Figure 1 (cartoon, one colour):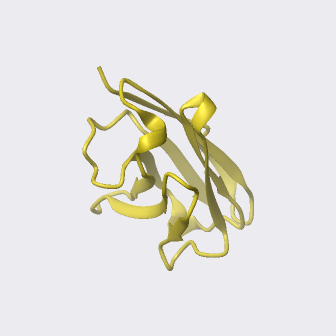
Figure 2: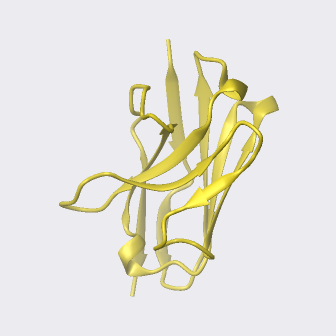
Length: 114
C-alpha cells in the first residue's frame, strides 16, 4: 500500500525558512521521479518542484532561487528546503510522483505571515 507522509510545515514570518520532508513507502522509490506540490487557500493544486531519479531538478518560476528539492533514496524520502518565504507561499504542501499517480497524503500546512 502506497503511503506518502509529509511533515515539517508550520507558521513562519516572511523571510524565514522551513524544511519539508516526505517519507514514501509501498513503491520502488528510487525508480520514480518525485515532486512537491502545493494548494493555496481557495486555489488549485500546483507543481512546485520536481526531481528525477538521478537528481535533476526543475522549479516553478515563483519559487526558483528560493526553494531546493532533494532526495535520499536510502531513506525513501524527498525534501523541500524553502528559504526567503513569502506570504504567497502559504499553502498545504504535498509530495507525489511527477504524474501524481499515487494517493495523496495529508499534506503539511505552511503559513507565512507578513
